[in-house]
Length: 336
Image (cartoon, rainbow, N blue to C red; front, side, top):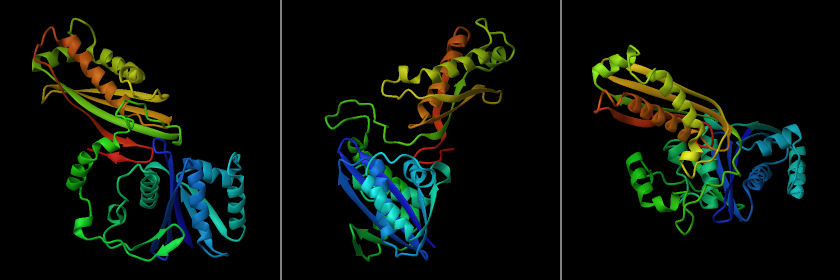
């Protein structure tokens, strides 16, 4: 059985679509990719599927894994074909001569092959400044044959030490190319809200943490409910939840998204004389909830500061950071 992994991308700023398909057959990986101007991500997903299937002979048994609900559910659940009817008809013709199984995968359950073709499609559409390196996804000894257009160029990408981007090198490279990768800036350097209209609706989660450090006596007052302004932990929890819902009003370029759940947990750490704050946010949307989780932590911490500042002038808010996110193209990222 042959396995195909497909992806499509569209760069709104450059008006360029990119597609990529990875064929895995008997532990050999073959890449086919390309670009088309003024063609959206959904169409690019369709081109990737057609290009992959037609590269295999009639009678083949194929499993196609894609992160595109539009592609997979159109073929399996009868979603409406609202454009590119000729390409859909050609895809039907190809599938009649082959046994094709369709699989939708996205986020933490997606295999590295999915991440690789997504990165390749982004490179074709101009989002990435370099093509993805095989070693980043599959390891140094994995052979990959690269197809350019319809012509097979049988070459194994060089995986010498100088061509592998390790974390430190990658950080330096990202700093050099920072201006080209800041999606909140347009080509003239003006602020813009990123267009997420081409992205799929997916379940997303973000977890953020932070701490409020204070005198031991202040922590004792909080624990005993003796702060004059009221129940510090209860009010800080409500403030954090309310703040998460107001994130797009506080941070100019954040998208307003439907939050399905927000939780703020506060823990008294007697040994280090601080309040630890953890905020978790969930949504089903086209963009993530990292900012909502960090906003919840930040406002909960500021609320603690405000309620306790009359008895402790040295309170510090420390280490507000994202610790985990899941969903979307990047899948699951665990930072600590």
